[in-house]
Amino acid sequence: MNRRSWLLMALLAALWGASYLFMKVNLDEGMSPVFLVFARLALGAVVLVPLALRENALAGIGRYWRAILFVAVIQVVAPFVLIAFGQRHIPSSLAGILVASSPIFTALIAARYDAEERPHGIAISGVFIGIVGVALLFGIDLSGDATALAGGLMVVLAALGYAIGSLYLKHGLRGVQPIGIAASTIALGALLMAPVAPFAIPSQGPSDEALAAMLALGAGSSGIGFWIFYTLVRDIGPGRASLVAYIAPGFSVVYGATLLSETITAGAIVGLVLILAGSWIAAEGRLPGRARATTVAPLEPPAA
Image (cartoon, helix red, strand yellow):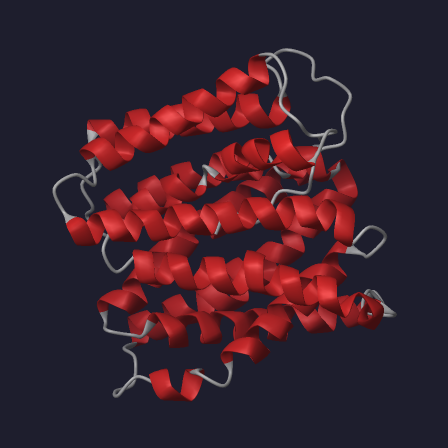
């Protein structure tokens, strides 16, 4: 990877790690999760659709409408809504950590449905390490509070949706330009949310801080972030580009602690380390520093 790619990856991790902060700012002001997701998707589409059109990435995509619809629901709308509802009850930093469990679910699903991605050898131990990390968070940081437990489960379900979507993308949308997939699924997601969004319009206008966070979430994390991600996919390949999923949670923890004054417990740190280590081993099939086996990795979803 050259210097430009590393800079883009750092910027992307900062944007995706900040998405939980941006959501929390709006949710704390009383914004409905439904309207928050709609606005996020609409703003993201405003950025992504022109970029896709410029690269002619939407040509012929209509024949894949069923696959695009499935991905829009399972990997965009459902996870975004679940995370938004979940973050009403848990800190933004914890949401960022739990979403990082997505590669664990990818490995578990692949064990049954994708022979090429089925975990073998040390990758299996990575799955168990990640599960221990998730269990630790639920046993320590979410224990004793039913609403926090429900919020954490919603975020974990979102991570499951990301995992299902990543494997489906690999098989169901072969040959479609990635930026075309991003633009079409985000735009379709906004259209799917449009009928219910009017019923969730806030009763009062957002503060300047919340409005700035909303613009940064939609145009930044969802718009520019997706564009950077698929630029990296083109330049360095999906496997290396997906490494951003292991960097972004660190940013979410830092943002939560420094900007939202969230308490970062020892259990959260240990859980983060176990989830990221387990996800890495499960996804890469190796320990850090060891050569990777020659396989075709599924395109991992966004970390937000």
